[in-house]
Length: 164
Image 1: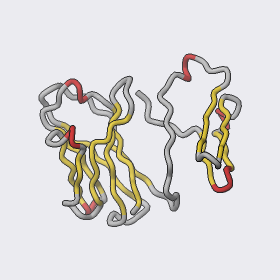
Image 2: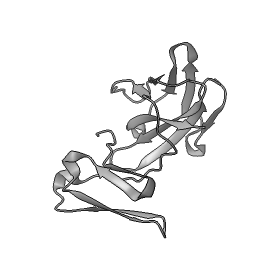
Image 3: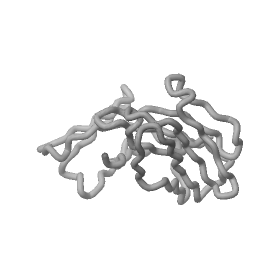
Image 4: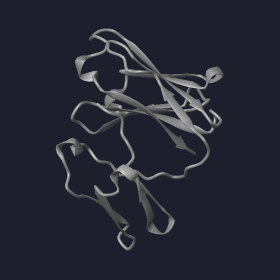
């Protein structure tokens, strides 16, 4: 499963720009009166099959990076610990959310940790006790640990930053 890729973004006044490789494949309409954005595909092919999402970004700034652990394969019953290393901003100024996507399914929120706090952690009710979020402020890294993996935990796992 591939990581999500951006198709387009919209900024003030309804202006938008597509990635060059997608200019002829998609169109976008913005209806400010109903706060609706519609993405339409033209001449789509089998390789365009995907789950498409719309997301709102509160703000974009700086040269911010979240670098994750490379792909890992584990067997049921074992544990895994994946990392998300933060650079380009202070580790005390945001939340890091952990999300997973099982094959053929939408995104599932696992939980979040307020960076630099070590203790301000919230987990999805349905996943409490399955995952542990920790951090190492000295290396600007957060960790998602799963113990006693089950086959249904097979997924692509993501970290994402939320500004305060």
